[in-house]
Amino acid sequence: MKLNAIIFDFSRTLLFPKDTTYTGGLNKRYAEVKEKPNFVFTDYFTFNDELITYLESHQDAWTVHILSSKVIQDDPAVQKHIGHLFLNIYSALRIGKKKTDPELYRIVSEKINEQPGHVCYVDDKQKNLSAASSAGMMAIHYTNNTQLIADLKKL
Image (cartoon, rainbow, N blue to C red; front, side, top):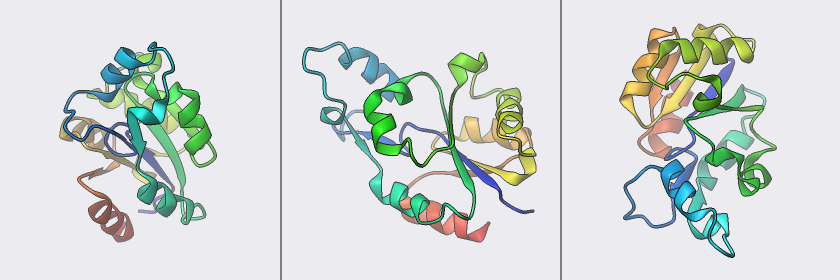
């Protein structure tokens, strides 16, 4: 089957906490710090620039999109850093479905005008990947960039 589009989870695939000991959710962390005086996004979060550079160099191969749980991706720093690369950025919260619901992935496939079988979903959480697979998508469990790039090359 031909891969036409990749949908990425945002947190812990494309974005990581700057504090490497932080184990909580990034949307939760964002909610805690965004109202601080002199808040600077990159003081708390770091982009996966190695993966972003890889995706930039393969823009002719597929379209790339983001499906996040909540709203961290709306921060202006995110748009400034990666807005040029991702065709669409979706929020499960705004769509009104949980990332464990296969219907969410069917809805997003429809929004990007692709059949689920031509879409790959990348996430660090197996339960979300199971839902995407149930919707008919290819799924890759993200553990690190080397593994992900090798898995994408296989597709």
